[in-house]
Image (cartoon, rainbow, N blue to C red; front, top):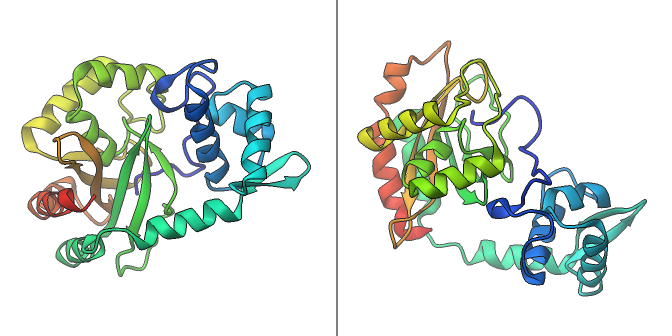
Length: 266
């Protein structure tokens, strides 16, 4: 399960998407970051939390929220909290309805071949965000959920994505988000991460071996877009007390095939 035992990864005031400081970005960029913060799981969110998550000054956040509420994209919920408005929900429904056919078929086939829980995540700034989850038919359940944001350096999908990005972009992303420790096995230095990414590029997939959460072991492969740049990734999630690392790595051919099949669909 490529998530920690607690909450989603918070966005720090050190930077929003792309690691910008609180004063950076055009009005449009700030508005989009604020919308993303309002739409994050666990809402409605307090003004102070939206401000920190979007990395936008409080006065600007309040002004932009007022404008978004007037247009129906957000809704003031009282006590200084803001939630998703009807216009944003309608937009989300339109986007969901327009999703390319075939994505779920690929994920179902991967689950059938491996017998494990399958995740699809997209790259969202300094994190990945789960957009699909197919739970395995097993007695245990994983705590991940659609909409959860996870670190790049601790997850199999995140590491597979980083491995396909230019080194300077990897350095910028990790400098902005940091390399916080989530378990004793988390890679927390640039040297460790660079060595791991070299291995990921060599074998064509990544492994999260209890680096994000104890007892959880995952394998992930990046899904490249038309230009070869990764847009996200796909993974299989297992538990260490039932599936060895060798067995997880044996899922690589099915995983890479799923990533190739998903590439033209995302």
